[in-house]
Every structure is written in structure tokens, then in C-alpha cells.
Image (cartoon, rainbow, N blue to C red):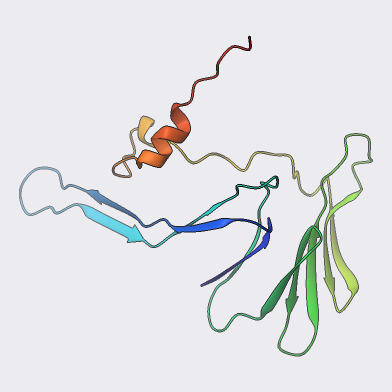
Length: 155
């Protein structure tokens, strides 16, 4: 799989390998099960914290480049496709386009606020998983430090 990060311009990549082993219950040779994967963690240290990424599943990935608010993918036949995301404004009509897909410079899809909510949280990854009783193995130190900060009252 190929990962292309179109935004932000400044970011750091770390490997984030993950594994889990569930011990079998009782005797009788029940060994339980396990799984593992090789992962990636993207970190932003600059002023921008919104990520625009492309995951290309297999084979040689096409050429990709960052464009304002999105990404351009150059296909094998010389045609390019662009996906552009736009942050919605509170006072605009619900029908305003938030995501546009263009092929060879021609718009082929526009998704509005009725189709997609770009302000919706995409969820958190953190200590809530072990707290629910589904043990993914040891909690990494970086995650404990990230989630351990308590809000402090303003002076």
C-alpha cells in the first residue's frame, strides 16, 4: 500500500506497529488468537493540523501532488483527477459544495453539506478502548502522556 500525504506541508512520519494476543481460556490446547500489523503515524508540528491523505491499495501508485485544499492524481492515460475539500462556513446554504472531484479539469462530483459533514469528529483513538474491556495490549507511553493532560483552570 502507498500512502501519500498532500497536507499539511510539514509533518513527521513514524512507524506504528501494533499487535494483540488473546490468551485462550482454560486448558485443552485452546491457544486463543492474535493479530499484528505494520502501521504509520503522521504528526503535525506546524500551524496546520488537518491531514489530506491518499491510500493507494496495490501495485505502482500513480504520480500524486498536493494542490490547494486537496490532491491531484495523474492517471496512466495522461488524465488527472483532483479531489478538493473546502471548509464550510456557518452562514452558507446547505447545498454549497464541500468536496469536489474533477477529471481532466471537468467537475464530475460535488458533495454538499447535505451529503457530508466535514465538521463531524472522525473519532478519537485512545484510552477509551482498554477502558471498555477490549484489550489491545499494552498502552503506549506516548498515548498515556497525550491523554493524561488534565484541563487546568485559567488564572
